[in-house]
Length: 122
Image (cartoon, rainbow, N blue to C red; front, side):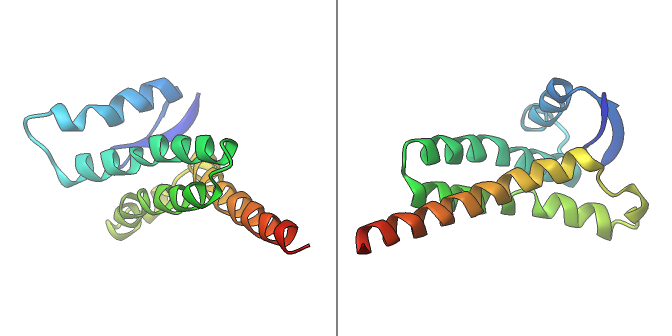
């Protein structure tokens, strides 16, 4: 188990448990800002998977856009963590690996776009 953030609180749970915790807010009767931001941040996962699929299907521009969207979706959640006076509770390594996978998608897509343009020019 690795420490992860669920609804703004650091806890140690498995990835599938974090997935279930982030999927619950839309079905709650008493929504809070923490619930909404964690769900919006979770939406980066399907967008990233869509981007990785587009990259494999050689739709590089769509993959590039999906990478940016997946990197922007968790931003309100991370801002909420640091502006809430809880800066000592910064995300652990799992969160940064998660965010870097979106950055890798962006860089790989852009590199493929540039490589395709250079191949066409030659």
